[in-house]
Length: 319
Image 1 (cartoon, rainbow, N blue to C red):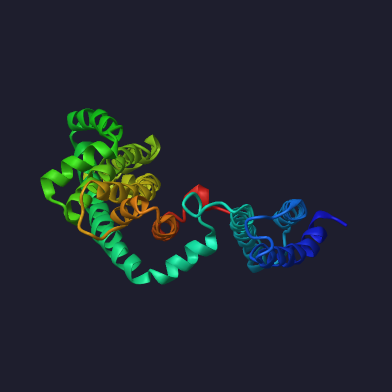
Image 2: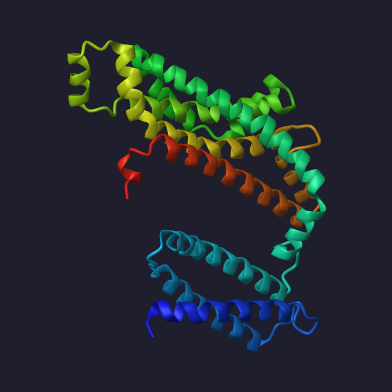
């Protein structure tokens, strides 16, 4: 039996074994006092999952749709098994919830706190992250165009950008709170500072990506600076610009959450995390972390999807 055949046989067996283990670990006889036999069974499931996922990763169906489904199933199943291990280890070993709550407890708290999570999401992501992200990326792009046109400005701004990029957000956030107040504008200002220079540096670098032959060709057509910029240099810089947009999509969320630790109204992801940690309510903290992870992943995926449509011609997307 080859690896692919073993994967097809083992995958449903591992799935059923995981369901049985989850049911068993939540029984009163096993919760917090799992024995050696239970852990041997978990170890067996772990080894079987490795064999199954390894075989699935080598499957290559003829249908393009099936290939995409198989390619998607491997990371999904791998992530699901990690959550399974988290659940059975925490529940079976009786780990206190103040140290590490189980995924089931986090999910229950998430579902029970949807109104609070919604308000925190609007305050942190919709108001602070999106506004700061748009302002920071747009201003960085505009200044990069100006710096490309004015060489001395480019030579002065790039070292400054490297300096500011090294500044810790915990040093910037209190200053912005003092300048712009305790509401979301101060958090948006932190996001602007964190996203401005990555966009500036990447755009300036991307504008230099066009080859010498292409520039000479535009010159032979008597194209001016702005024509060359729009028709040649900006399209060549798109991979660099989208790289900055993707980097900033994660930096913006991190900056806004950290900035809320230093003063905010009684709403927001960072505020909720700091308050619930003080209350030893770790399930709510993890629920906020899960919300931030979901929002950040969707935001990053949206930017990557737009990049795929705008830079389909790039060699990295050729199949």
